[in-house]
Image (cartoon, rainbow, N blue to C red; front, side, top):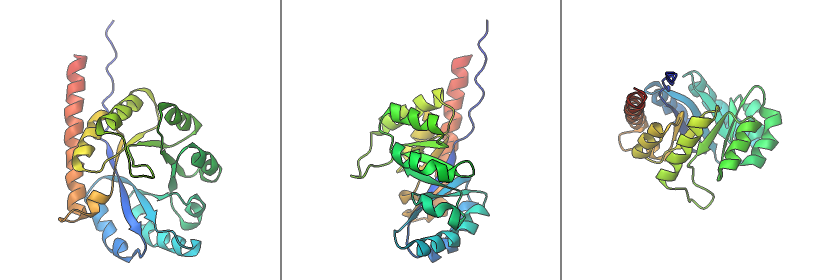
Length: 226
């Protein structure tokens, strides 16, 4: 009996983390243009902690630029601000944070989860209702797994589980590796904003790299099926 062909995997999409935002004005001025040049599924807003009223105002200043581009706006933590600021969801770190946040986020808003050091933790948050799992971000001490280990975890998840997986890439080369490994989304941040060519050019460059890696891995998978 012939094996059923595996449906083609969609091209991984970009997930853009902002710099830590204090004054949102520069980002408000540039973000719409940055997002217009690439296929960005979501923006992760990293806020500098201050009083809630100020943080809500900062989120509200950025919501139109993100949502009008067709992307979702997620807050890095700060679950209590999501609904009040008009954001689309939150990124949470660890199982406990997700369990605390789910009642206020579900069913209308996105709950993504990182800080998952073991396969068991990853499966637990997937079963509990996480909208995506993130692999590869630095821990509180700035340490992260090897690129090979992150790619292996992405490949394992993509082959077995339904919720999307996200690879945290600190360079264009890492974005290529994670796209080839099976990531549904690739999270990029600091290296995009630090690029001397500007974030729009850097983001477009990474998107092209992801598309090339996806095409190469899809071609290899097709050849192995034949």
